[in-house]
Amino acid sequence: MVGEPGVIKKLDQVVVNRIAAGEIIQRPANALKELLENSLDAKSSHIQVNVKSGGLKLLQIQDNGTGIRKEDLAIVCERFTTSKLSKFEDLTEIATFGFRGEALASISHVAHLSIQTKTASEKCGYKASYSDGKLLDAAKPCAGNQGTIITIEDLFYTMPQRRQALKSPAEEFQKISDVLAKYAVHNPQVAFVLRKQGEQPTLKTQACSSRTENIRAIYGGAVAKELMEFSHKDEMFRFELQCQLTQVNYAAKKSTLLLFINHRLVESPALKAAIDGVYTTYLPRGQHPFVYMSLVMPPQNLDVNVHPTKHEVHFLYQDEIIERIKLQVEAKLLGSNATRSFYKQL
Ligand code: ADP
Ligand code: MG
Image 1 (cartoon, rainbow, N blue to C red):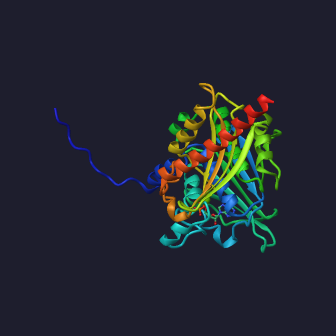
Image 2: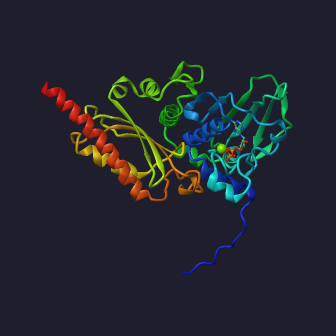
Image 3: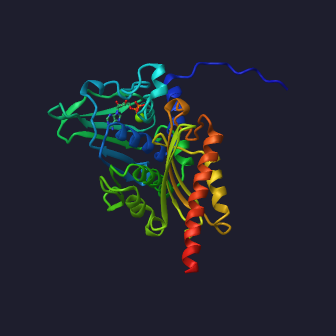
């Protein structure tokens, strides 16, 4: 039996916004990544994160960056409002993380969001709350240090199914901690603190420390003491590589790759497979390395105009660049291996 066709209706705007927001902000760790990038864009040197119940009850980030201008507080959570991009052409040269003005807007559609902020030129700070992209009441003056505190409460209260589909608070906290750890390693000039509300920090790095120091503080001495460092500049394919990777004495059950391209935390399955491939020659079966890699290339060669949740990136000359990186890693591992057997012979 053939039924009647469905009646097509336009969805309510709030529903549309919620669906779109839910695609951008999929879990607390996603939200944190957006907020961290905002704090780094605002040139902060101290970033503190406070979490309750895996970020579902509370996810709060405090920075000492530029702050947000009082005049902008009314529109900051509207969709497509940004201080970072004005023309489409700018996209090819963008140097900041954000550029679409979607993060705060999205969060305000799926959580209670409030902003407390103070710029250098204002005498006092201002505090404002948002819902569905809109400022709830006029921003109120308040005391406070320069910088911004973004407070997100009851994430996904508007989407009970999403909330149920998430992992346990402990696992969500682990994902938050993972994201923060990676940004802390990549940005040793900035101090990071992560704590569960009311508890001692679970992660802490100092301002102006070194990358190795941060790897030691976060991933442990066993990793840090086996690290080798190298950098490589490639004129032909125009990229620069900085890398810290464990030598073949080190092996873990799980492979860890911290990959930043143009300072964004990204994933590249092709690059990961290539690096793992090099190590399989040297490591026993089932054993894996720890690798930190930062690639910088001309912004025109990297497709940043991807959806915010697409952490997988594609870049120009990808195969060639990966091949070159592989050779570099190989040479470094061979070098360390040679040194090792040389010492053994003595
Ligand atoms: P985007 O980062 O793509 O511009 P967001 O929604 O993440 O979009 O942020 C909107 C705007 O809010 C930013 O362009 C910036 O001007 C301001 N902003 C957000 N977070 C901060 C912060 N921690 N410090 C200073 N300004 C901020
Ligand atoms: Mg942003």
